[in-house]
Image 1 (tube, rainbow, N blue to C red):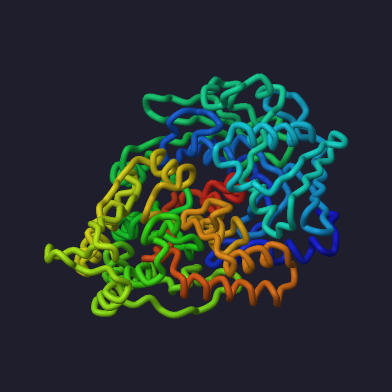
Image 2: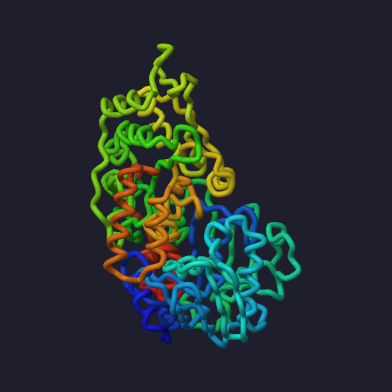
Length: 536
C-alpha cells in the first residue's frame, strides 16, 4: 500500500502511541456492507456546539475533518498513521518529507484535487490560523513540483510530523484563494471538501448539521447514506433522547460520558456500551511557569500534596478511572514509565509552603508571598464542562485548607482557548488533554508543556529542551524508550502539571447496528465506523 524508505518503515512502527482496548484493529476504510444492510440515516447527538460553520470554528473542524474533509494521512483505530490523500511518503532525515498523492481525488464540486491545493492550504493556514505556529512552527516550506507530489521541509528533524498532518484538513485553492478572513466565510462554498460526505445544511437555531453521502467520492463507498449531527444543550437531555431512540449514539470529542449514566443504560436492551482506556487525561492541573510563583518548583510540589486524589477519582469516575502517576503520561502509552505515585499529605504541603516562604504573616488564615504581598493565585477552567466546574471548586477547598487563597476564573470555551493557547495569561488552569494532544510536539504530552508548542506550562529550561529535541530527531527504539522515561521522570520531579484523575472512555451506542469502532482521535466517528457500520 505504501512505497516508503527503510527509515520510514521504522518510523511508522512506533510513530503513534499504542491504543489499549480497541473494539477492533483497523488500518483504513473497510468495504461498505451489502446494500440490504446499509444504513439510510444515522443520527448522532452531541453537546459540542458548532457556533458558526467556518473553518476556524473548533467543533465545525471536529465534525468536518472526518466526514467531509480529508488530510494527507489519518489516524487509524489501531493508532497507526495510515494513507489518506497521500498514498505514500518518503523521508531520509525526518526534515524533508515527500508525499505522493492519490490521482483520482476531487473536490465536492468536481474540480480535481492536486498538490497545489495542499501547498495552498499550508500557506493559507499559516496566515489565517492563530494556532498554526503551535503545531507547524517548524515548517519552512511547502512545494508542489507536480500535481501529485508535495515536498515539505522542516527546520529540524521531527519524528512526529505525520501525527500533526493527520489533523490538518486540506482546502480547495479555487474556493479560498480570494477569502481574506475565513472566520467570515460560512456559506455552502466554505463547506466544500474532498471527503466521503457533503455537508448540505447547518441550522444555526438548532445546531443541526446534515451530511449526505458524496456519490463522487474518490475512495470506498461509506456505509451510511445520511448523517445528522444534532446539538443538545446538556448531556441529560441528550441521554434521554438516546434512550428514546431519537439518536443512535451520543458523541463528545476526545472524551466519553459520565459513569452516572451506566446503570440505566445496562437495563436498556437496545443500548451497548464501549469502555476504552483513555490515552488522554481527563483533568490536569497546569502551572504557567512564566507567572510569578508558578515557576517555584517547591510551590508546585506543595500543591501536589494538597490534593485528595482518591476523593476526586471516586467522585468523578465512580470506579471507571484511575489516578495517574506523578509522571502524568497515561498507563498504556508506548514506553510508559511507572514513576512515583501522587500522594495526599496536608502536613507535607504546609511544610513545603513554609520552607518556600509562603506564610500567613497577618493571621487571616491565608498565606502571603515570600516578599509579604497578598497571594491569590487564579485557577481557570471551562464553563461548558460541568465536571471541571465542580472539580475546581474541590481544588479550591483543598488549597484553602493549606492556606492558599485561590481565586476561580470560569470562562467559556473560546475565552479559555485564548487564555491558554494564544495569550498565555493564565496562572493555574484545569483542563483535559486529548489523545492527539499527548502525541504532538515530541510526544508524551510534551507539546502541552513546551513553550515552543502549545505551552500550557510554558517550560523552556535546558534539561527539558534537550530531551524533547533529541526525542524528535531519533528513530532508534531503545533511545526513544530511554528518552521517554527521562521525560516522565522530569514531569514527576519538576511537576509542570499534575494529572488530577483520569476517567475511562465510556461510549454508548445503538446495538441495532454492528460495526461501531472507537478511534482514538475521532471516537466513534472514525472511518472504521463510517465505512463498516451495518444493521445487526
